[in-house]
Image (tube, rainbow, N blue to C red; front, side, top):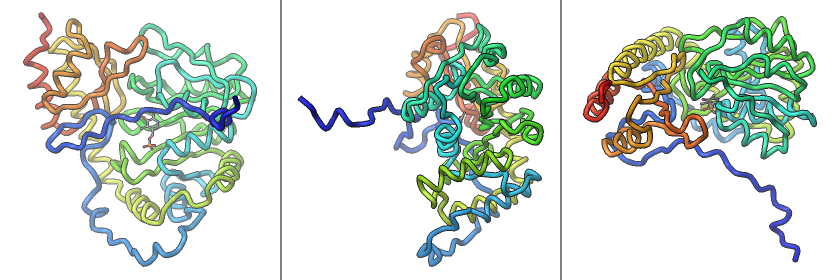
Length: 352
Ligand SMILES: *Cc1c(COP(=O)(O)O)cnc(C)c1O
């Protein structure tokens, strides 16, 4: 029997972190930034009359601002509805080959979902036993390469030489570096886009810029790469960026002092929190992100996860091979992390 169901594009969707609908919780499960927008941005009055009209399809207000900020030409910048939208467009645009796309086995769990939904072949390259990306794995024939730097959920950073080696070895593929967390202590691959026309660097406003709810992400590369991205975008939806996002996004980029201050606070808190966790018997991977990836020497991750939940503290647990005894903890404010340590102390200790 034929059924309409035979003709459906079936996918196993990405599962986002929980957004609990209860008050007074400490939410450390989706890497949001605890500080929110600056007073300057909060004081912006949006002209709602303007929403009668379609937004600028070129998103020039924001694109020009980002180009100026990163010392690029506007033709080198592509904006989208969060970097999820940007990366999804990249998969559709650049990964159009019969050869497999490469990414790590432990990484942002959206990559294999996009590959599946667009029917792109892929191979996951295992991280080594210390959760490092193995460079040599990315020097084989492929249809494209993507990984985050720092990687997620490990928080581990690779250097520019490492990235340059991979880009150089792959002149027939587009290499995408997902820099969702680069502002928390990493060195950006951006200077390499002038040297390599197959390199694309992707950023988001959701983490370091504290605006996950606004949904802004962007990609930077040479003008030709960006043109191909725009061609696909205009073939799917010309008006991805709404007018309030363009106005607020551009104002956020103007607020450099606030940005540096809040990122500095998070880095500071991360280092203090890491030391406290180690005191309680946790192994903490060295993180250059706004989260830490941790495992306790004796208490199982699922037990910690549940106990914290009972105390209205939310961590992220991935029920996946190799990392199911780890927890990913977003760095919140100092006060939040002190409370976390207080609760952890009641049932985790280095000597238990
Ligand atoms: C959070 C995240 C994204 C997506 O962020 P958006 O909110 O869609 O901008 C992309 N890649 C990685 C590795 C992330 O952690």
